[in-house]
Length: 146
Image 1 (cartoon, rainbow, N blue to C red):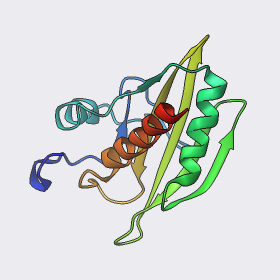
Image 2 (cartoon, one colour):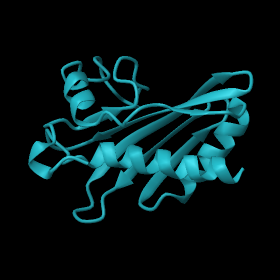
Image 3 (spheres, rainbow, N blue to C red):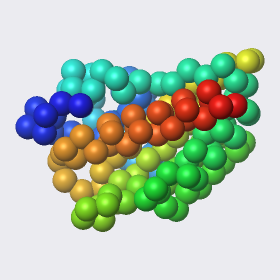
Image 4 (cartoon, one colour):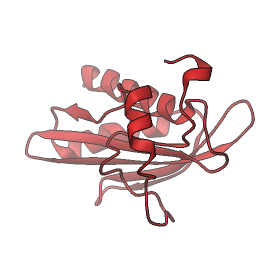
């Protein structure tokens, strides 16, 4: 991760900035287009996760991982849309950040997309990117065990 002062002043991070999943209640534009280049430069490791499981099996694994994440609240799991929304509460100051996770795919493979956005402030000191990286690492570890 970049040093604290080198992190961009953005508060919305997505695994695919060109087509980020929509957050509940988001007004157009759903993802600030000016964030995309800053995010890619600062957090190149934030990207979709490919899983060699059917979308339904991948979603079940992703949903179980989301339920196990510390500080994640108000989870809404929509199995039909293969989408999970919720609120991540930061440990230190109890800030609330919204996130959405979507499992896409066809056949025997799936792709996990995620977006995390701070409700307050112009920057997040890398918290949203780190949340996505932590979640993707958790899912990857569960895929290995599956």
